[in-house]
Image 1 (cartoon, helix red, strand yellow):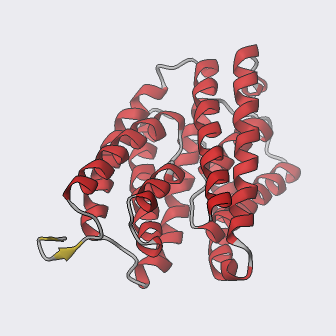
Image 2: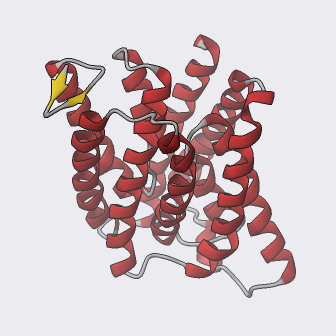
Image 3: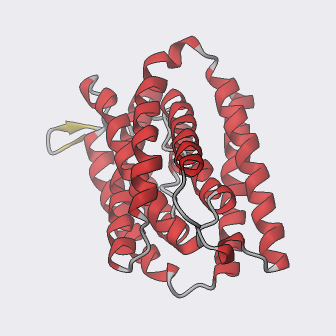
Length: 266
């Protein structure tokens, strides 16, 4: 189908459905601090969008959504810039490396490992929300050499995996922030979206240079995702930490199962 001189791989009803899905995913992602490209990507693929176009379009939509949500969190003071630096820079480096060497590793194995980890973290979040115990109550603590190494290592590893599978993978980075770094779930949401923006921008470079973009899909899904993410981010400050953990747990569990399904289905 041709729209204003730009070709799209879907027809009118598919375009409308994908736009609605992107808006809904944006609201949920803005609330919990995830770009949730792992939900958009399967939707694109299930509706017949070719894999290269789906991957390139999805990662930029995720980046735009992450940027919009991050701005709202930043204004509310829910972004920890020290973590953005210490975890974000290694994440970008890892993403670039993962993209370069992705063809040498079995993609289904990578996606399956990511899915298993996300399912485990989602289940743990649900348990912790039920018990109303939040590790963030301890505070982040002083910045030590060990903490710098741990944050950088976590960021690099997640970036490497994300670059290899073509996803921002904030669904792995977010629980790592809460579990291993001990920061408040609301601050983790804003910080994760900020890192996701930088990571997604780096990951998109390769797709953009290869022309892996469906412009009509990008414009409509990107606009809807940004609007949804902005609204979702405004809801974060109104949700209690234990309830936010519960929502995060449900979302992570769903995303993890989607990744596992994608790994099995190929």
